[in-house]
Image (cartoon, rainbow, N blue to C red; front, side, top):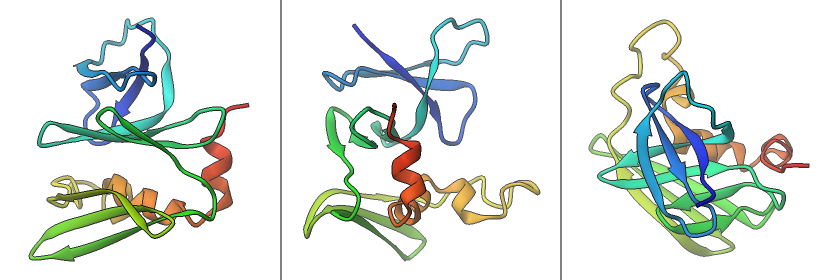
Length: 143
């Protein structure tokens, strides 16, 4: 299996081994002696579902479990709404919703001096805001 290895968005002790061809994935211990190279990207685990983003030669790939979506400049967007202390993220391709997830805000917000910025502790907020920038697409496109 050809796995890529992605950092967990909130925890440093686990990583995701993700097969970009099949979508097969498993969380594993993050070992400093690990020889595998970490890829440009990150993920989160919400109720047993893996959501994340990684770089590819075609551009940024967003995934939910085995489903993968190439994010194209100008044709994708996201919304993030909060209701009753639950965040609702929706990713669109054109006008079609392709991924929707509801989740609790990060427990690590305001945890220390470095986590007071909500964007630093919320992967979905970072993705939503980044979709509006050229830098995002350049960063997640491998040469």
